[in-house]
Length: 70
Image 1 (cartoon, rainbow, N blue to C red):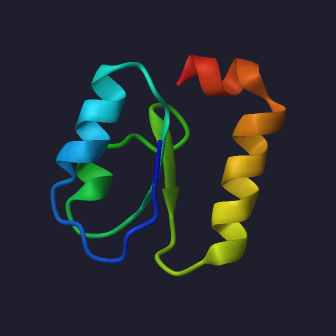
Image 2: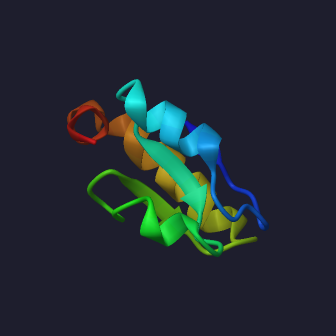
C-alpha cells in the first residue's frame, strides 16, 4: 500500500492496509511515524522525495521476502 502524502495526520487508510497484512509505504508526516515502525511494519519517506519513493517501491518489488515480512 502506498500513500506518499504530504499532509495526513492520522491515516486511517494506512491502518486499514496494515490490518489486512499489507506493507505500507507512506510519507513521514505528522502522526504517521507514531503508526508505522520504519523498516518493520512499513517504510517512512521524506515528504516530496520522489527518488526515495521510487527506491522504496522497487525494493519491495524486488525483494518479496522483505515485503511479506512487513
